[in-house]
Structures are given as structure tokens and as C-alpha cells.
Image (cartoon, rainbow, N blue to C red; front, side, top):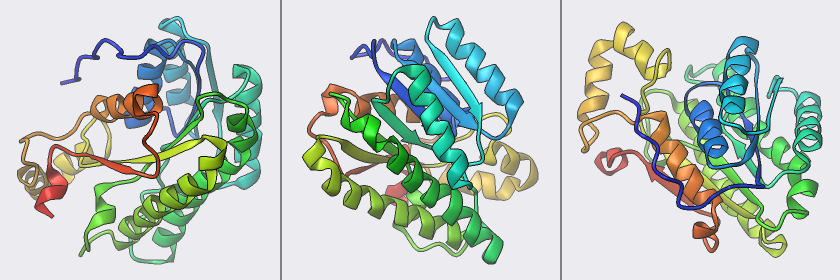
Length: 258
């Protein structure tokens, strides 16, 4: 069941928010949360149908909406998208790198998917957005990491390793950009369940794994995309104005169980 949106503690009127990987699940919820709080929002992904649906949902909230199909494994495509998003929105205040290649298999393809999409897409989008962020009075970068980054994993080693690299990059990037007053943080979600998402598929295809994951969450439920979106709103707001270089677990206590 979707989590009802709280009344925004801080209005994002006038903010320009760019979400790389924003058409489904967590990214879609982030886009709608920022739009509902008054921000202009740009999203990208590869699938055109989900992009169209999410753009229409953003616009229905009265927000300026921009969407563009983009292969986030392609540096030139990222540069083109960031430029178009900045032109359409009139700048960039918040950049959210939310895409994942879901590189779970311990083979070259699995490692390369994670490296290109989870890590290098975030590095490249940040690089291309930096001139716009430097011009913003409240610039912020958010990365979507994972609690998989914090513990050894018998399964999905490439995914965990790449997310650990993304969390480490967050700290180095935060230190490098502090002189420009650009805050950089990451969110590490636990197991988040939404329609046709990873855990929804595992519920159907690997029910034993699904039940084991649910049992590992002290709060007794899977996360909802809105749980992660609410954390993004906080970290992008002035309420988090002295927070940088951190990775925030949003997981119902799942990381506490190892």
C-alpha cells in the first residue's frame, strides 16, 4: 500500500530537480514528491512509455515537467540529457542519480552493467551538471546506493561492490565540492517492493527468498518507493543544510540484522 505523502516540511518552489533514472519505482516516487512540493522536474530513462506516463503525472501536479529517453551507459547521451534538462528547467539545483544496471551475475556482463550504470553514470551526470550546480544557491547531489554496500554478500557480489564504490565516491565528492557549497549525500535503501520491481518479481518467482528478505526487516514490511522519496526530500532541503558526505540507510532496520 502506498505511503501517504506528508505535508512538505519545506516547499521546493523554484527548485530545478533532475533525476537520472526517474520513470519507475523509487525514481518515479522521487519525481512526484518533488513536483508535489513545487519543484520543476526532469527525468530520464530508457523506456519511453514509462517516461511518458511519469511526465504526465508530474505535469498533472502543476509542475514544469521534462523527460528524455537516455542510455545512461553512454557518456555522450548523458551529456546531451543534462544539457537539455538544464535548458528546459532553467538550471539545476538538485541532481539525483538513481539508475541501476542491476548487475547481479558474477560474470563480466554483471560487473560491467553495475560499473557503467550504477557508478559511472553518477560520475558523468555529476560532471556535466556541475557548472549548473555551481550557479545554484542550494545545490545538492543525491546518489541511490544500497544497504548491500555494507556487508559481504554470498549473492550479487558485483551489485554490492559497485554500490560500496558509489557510497565511497559520495564521501570524496562531498569533500571536493564543499568549497562550492554543493552538498553530496547518498541514500541506501533496503528491500523496496513495488509493482513489477525486483522484489515483486521475486515474490512470484522466488517466494522463499522473498519471505527470507521480509523476515530480515525488523519493521516487518518491505519498503515502499515513497519511503525513499521522503528521505530525498529531506536531504535536498535546507533542513539538511549542514549534512554532506553521508549515506543514509532507509531500510526499516534491515541493515541492523546484517
